[in-house]
Amino acid sequence: MAIPASAETMAIKHTVPGSESQLHPDITMTKEDSKQVVMVDVTIPFENQQQAFTKAPIWMQEKYQPLADTLKNQGYDMKVEVLIIGALRAWDLGNESIPHFRHYAKLMWCLMMSDTIQ
Image (cartoon, rainbow, N blue to C red; front, top):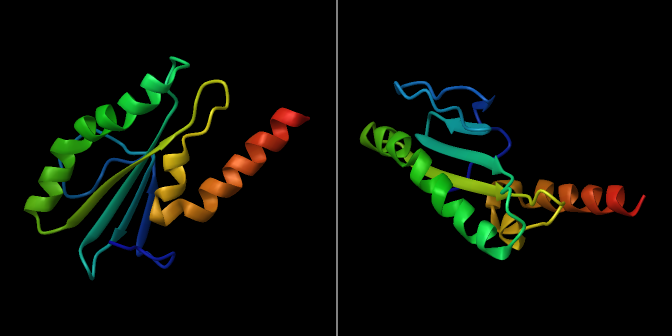
């Protein structure tokens, strides 16, 4: 699934139209003509261990699964992505595999490292 930058709708911290869910993903991209939705949630695990980075995507997928199921039942091609940043500026390499944010993920990493060095 690929939603280009010309997505019809991009919402930040809003509930998803077409559902009664009160969840509000950090970023929701929608393309109505091809019935595609990508939700991206940024999470900052409190624990500073690799386990926290492993568990975070599982927890976020579970959190948004009912909303994803609702949209799939309405005929949408649905994807939930998780962007993980450690509380002490640790970076999950899996962030760079998010197709829609690959460029931004790398830019964010560079800015975080630059800020740390200063």
